[in-house]
Image (spheres, helix red, strand yellow):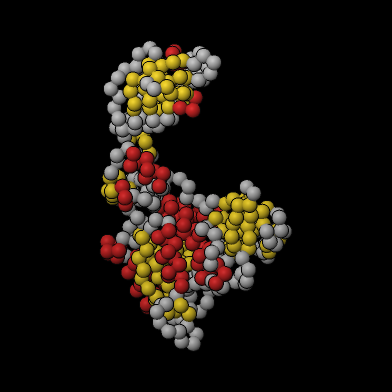
Length: 418
């Protein structure tokens, strides 16, 4: 049974990012949200594009107003009004000003903007009631970004702020990594789909739906393969088809997720089938609770997907996905950094217990209270088979090996999952 940190390292060493030449797609800007940028972006535009005003007021020459004060204001002639989107027509001379609005182009000859609250207008003249700072409220051309330099690096996730930057830079088409493809199936004679009536002893296959949602949430494409019975021949056929080079050409799965069949019961066949197909099993079990049974395997062909055999218990499947599969998808997707799970320090609202033998994850909700994270354990049974109280969970409190008790108000490391 391997330590959680060792399992994380093995998995991330196995995963190779998508190829920056072969695994790219060209998408339009509206389709780029949540994608991973495959090539750096530059722009031919400066930001700002030109000197412009950061305030409604008056464009002036600093030397004309540097000594202004309320008792002796500078008195300037207004020669032009410049709204945003208008090209100035005049050059300011000594003793002149231009009415200007936020975002508007600075006229030639002007180097400073006086905000309107520090002025008084009298017909076509303006009185400057307080001296500004030199170049105050002027946004200079290329102060934010200079044309030709790297605007965004490859390997970043395109979130709304990046989309806004790309739109402003007139980048209407982008090279992004294709979405990783994740094949998912559940194993178990007792499983049925949600649309079927339950017979005695049967349960609904919730894992396939949860894993598909998690895969999509992480920017990958789920390939749903349904339920496979706890039958060695059926499982062997399913796994051999998925892992073969021919299937790769058809389905292009980068990762395979199965749930169930990886423990030590009489009907747990996954590991022996993987070995019979020539797979190398890197992980069989992890010192984690919930989620001890975990199989991670690779096949000889470089084109074959990485295989994750997750536990069948629904909470165990979720925890092992969050802790181990999610980082793998992130690295595979082309992200340049930030693959590993992010833990934050929080104050526990409740008493948290563990037997101390395995790294233990307790599900609950994380809140920010007066600037401090606070973890609230959800009520009800914390059994790996109790899916019900996982609803609305957004965090997992982690108790390290050897830690058996966290008192209320004590600090605990928390993995954010929502």
